[in-house]
Structure formats: C-alpha cells, structure tokens
Length: 134
Image (cartoon, rainbow, N blue to C red; front, side):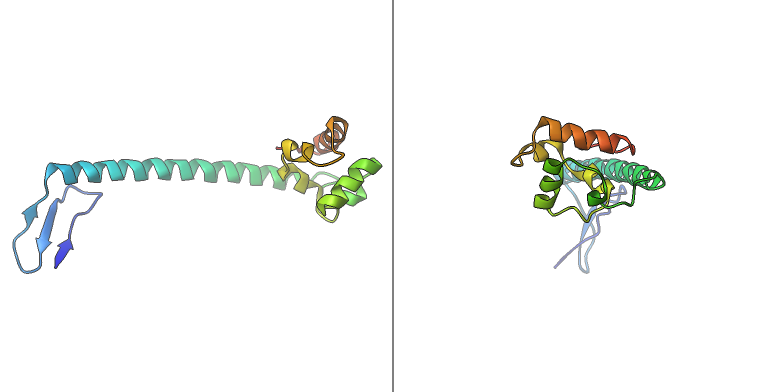
C-alpha cells in the first residue's frame, strides 16, 4: 500500500502512495529519523573504535610472535608444580604462551590453589615476552 521513499541520508522527505502524489512527512517523523541517524552514527563510531583496538592488539600479538618463547606450549616452560597443575586443570597446557595474555587475572584468582604468588609467577613469565594478563 505505502511505499517509503525516505532516504535517511538525504533531505528527501516524502511518502508515496502508489499511483498518487507525494505526501509531506510531519516534523515528528523527521525528528525520529534524525535521532535514528545520530544513534547509528554513534554505533558506527563505537564499532570503528573496537575494530581499531582489535587491530592494535592483533598487531602486538604478531610482533610478540617474533620473540623467542612465543610459539612454545605453556607446558614447555619451567613453571612451579602448583602453577603447572592449575594449567592442567584449565586444560590449556597445549596452548601457546600468548593464550595467557587473554586470561583475566581475576579469573585466575578464583581458581582453587591459585593465589597471589601463582599469579605473580605467570605475570613475570608473560612480561619476559611482552605479554600481560588482562
């Protein structure tokens, strides 16, 4: 019945009834459209910011991959028994060391037998390769 010919990115403001003359849009509709466009622009800006942060983080990981030790499995490092057992419980011993850079410190602290000293040990090793816990 109604065909919407309103382009949100232009000033063209009319609704067409098929086979009739254009009808003007009231100010409320125009205000709604402006609000919708503004909201979409804010979302686009946020997405661009997220994409930029992701690219920076990805670049840092790629640069760190050139460092010795990156590419080695977590189990290949000389961890204390307690730390090694925590990694076994987490089932991440076969992961690359850079995987630990995606783990939150607070999540580690919630694990049984993972305290301040264990977290310090992990942070120390990660720091040697330019990585850190989240």
